[in-house]
Amino acid sequence: MELVKIYECLCDLTRLRVLNVLAQGPLCVCHFQEVLREPQVKISKHLAYLRTRGLVECERQGNWMIYELPAKLSPELKRNLACLQDCARETPAFQKDLARLRKLGPAEAVAAIADGRGCGCEPPAKTSSRSTAPARARRS
Amino acid sequence: MELVKIYECLCDLTRLRVLNVLAQGPLCVCHFQEVLREPQVKISKHLAYLRTRGLVECERQGNWMIYELPAKLSPELKRNLACLQDCARETPAFQKDLARLRKLGPAEAVAAIADGRGCGCEPPAKTSSRSTAPARARRS
DNA sequence: GATCCATATTCCCGCGAAGGAATACGAATT
DNA sequence: AATTCGTATTCCTTCGCGGGAATATGGATC
Image (cartoon, rainbow over all chains, first blue to last red; front, side, top):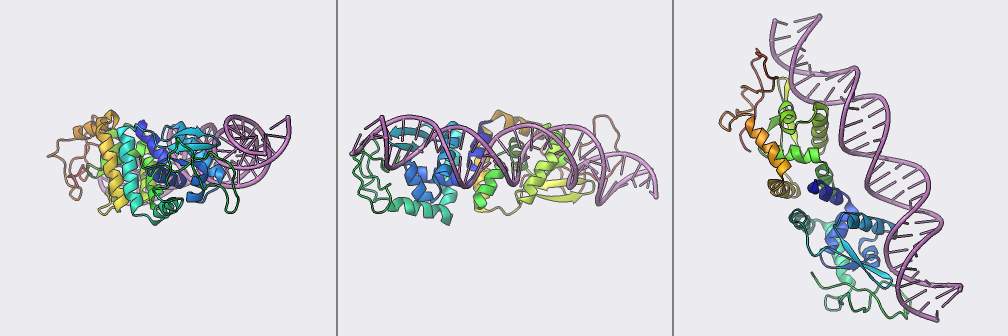
């Protein structure tokens, strides 16, 4: 039963937060860590959970893994994700995540994924000399 | 987190079917058994699960327990139940339940809960001499 | 008060999921 | 080749859930 699988994916807070954030556009794991303020293992495992069930897709970008919602969603899934966002709009916790997401960089600086630009992933003070990096993406 | 609790309630097929059926109106356990074709323990336990989480309410009616959706639903819950029904409308399994529900008695014969009338709960051939009985109710 | 019925609860089992620590992996840099 | 960095996976433990069998409960009937 397709529907139950969807709800199984939705019945964990971390995954709800992940999906809520992802609805704004693709994101890499390190950004998830910053936005959700959760340890890497946790994020990574929940993303894997969602991936194996087809709720998210990912693409490698050098060292970074960029996660995003699938381009094509089943009607049920689309409906439920919309419903989730409706609810999240009125829930402070989810809004805080979105606020932190926005702080990662102004919407304009939100670079494309395909072409690597500044990421902001690296810890506070550290002159990173690396060239390629992931980024937040434009709204889907 | 309110939302997660809701999804936890929705991530089991039996409970989804229960809620889908309940959206049509109050129902007693024995009718659930007929409609869902599931054993009594299963039905009863899932109803208890939903009850402790506030997704359903129940009221005793002689020997029968009448379950129904709460009159007042939180916005999140209302939205999600609506979403569930949208999805269920396109899912054969759920429609079959509704078909069996309708077969329990024509919509007109669907008696009020408060005043006991014919139930149809009792097994095939058995002249029940009991007077009070539960019934399906009008749409909420 | 004994019995019958509809329903609830208890006891059992097996399973899968969540979380964390440690470790593995793959790409890029040096 | 070795290191670094971002991320994934493994191993472990704990916990709650789903299912079924058996039993309990509570109201109604006799």
